Image (cartoon, rainbow, N blue to C red; front, side):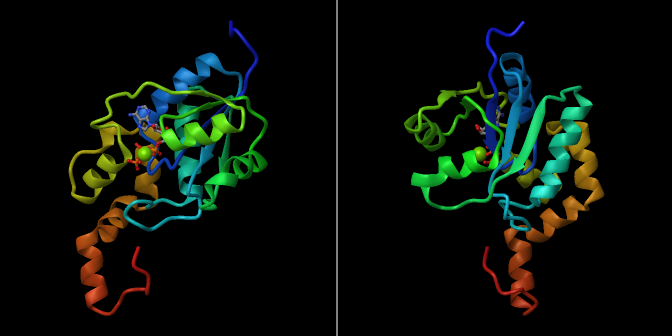
Length: 188
Ligand code: ATP
Ligand code: MG
């Protein structure tokens, strides 16, 4: 039995959605009724930091949670607006109502607290390995990464040819493409 009726928000970039994120969602599921997952920096894809589109991340998360039998979630892509003072209202305007935010990010915490939301931090699970940065590094450099993400995420990444994409986006590869004059004119 849950102590209270409450809907909770978790925001991340999920590049990609990994087992640390899954542990957080499972922990939140014990305390909350509905879980709203905001897919941040939704407008970005095809960069080394943000390789996957919002739609691909949506697929990773929904299939991974389905695989775990978790059904009480909403997924909402959220584009960056780069104005911190109004960022909370931007998020609020995009997602179903919620009363508590889960985050480990100091800025996110501050911004939601200032707007009167309850903010909780979630414990970090195996952070050395369950880290988007580390997983992207492993994929790009052909190290083992599959065990760090839910099975459903391995399938999505393979389906969209994500491994080759990450290798092509690695800084060393990009330089070669740019030097050959075949770049597309952005320096992300
Ligand atoms: P990146 O290295 O790309 O920043 P990340 O692993 O930090 O990736 P985010 O999408 O930035 O993932 O994080 C979304 C949320 O998930 C953040 O609040 C973050 O603190 C939390 N989180 C990330 N990794 C873990 C983990 N291993 N255990 C618990 N929470 C995590
Ligand atoms: Mg992060």
